[in-house]
Length: 126
Image (cartoon, rainbow, N blue to C red; front, side, top):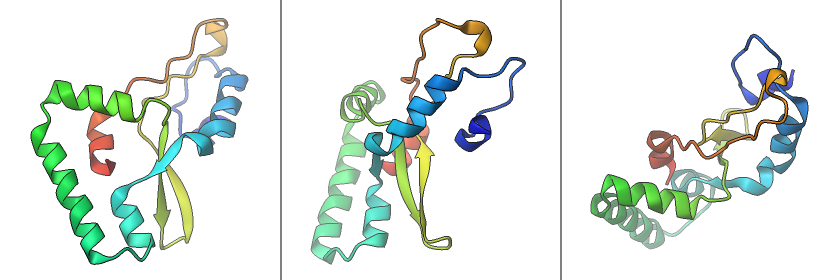
């Protein structure tokens, strides 16, 4: 059930339970809301919106791919998800920005890695 809730693919061996529980329990402390979604949800003055959208474009245009990767790694060091408000369901939804790699039961004792960043996805939100 946790595998489906997190959105993990089915494997030949089940996933270890504790890393998935820890991830779900901590995810709300390791999430940010995207700038575009903040503008959609909150009443922010036009001047402020224009300033931040212009700044976002400047940063995106100025960064080389290697610089951008280091920037994302630094800024989103403790972030695992982006929260988006869905106005159709009127609920907040998690959009995972990392390729989560949860250990399988057959890999007991192996470290869990969470830093495989999906840079294409995060560039949509940052």
